[in-house]
Image (cartoon, rainbow, N blue to C red):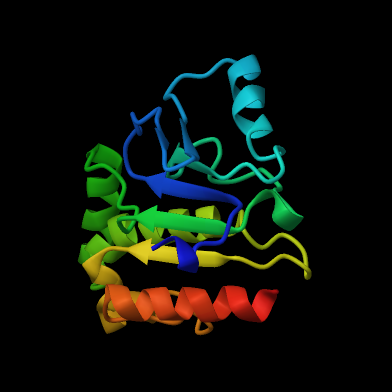
Length: 178
């Protein structure tokens, strides 16, 4: 529904490498490669500088573009995170889980949930870098509906129950902004 869209540049984070170099309905999709040279990184970041060109930039959640870059003003107007950012299962994570389970803490959350939510918040942090920055954040995963996850996120976040409610909130947000 194009009447509810805001033209600009968006960042989308995924737990794995994205593989969709496409142009759909006039929106150019760019993707982060797992291994990028310095020149390729600079070229990827250049997409955020192009004014009035609607783009969707796919990045690896927790990767090189999820933190440490400043995209102020109109360079980035939205972030969409697919998933809750859980780290991969591995020996280090299992050791952390085991330690916290031993001291009667919630080992799984210390090893997986909290680091995952931290990655999500780091990626969301690309959106608001100055007091003047405005934009939307879409966290897409049913687990964000759970009070446990909602309590780990900033209280200013608004949660929606369905697609229609999301469209209405986005429309209202962008109308207030203009």
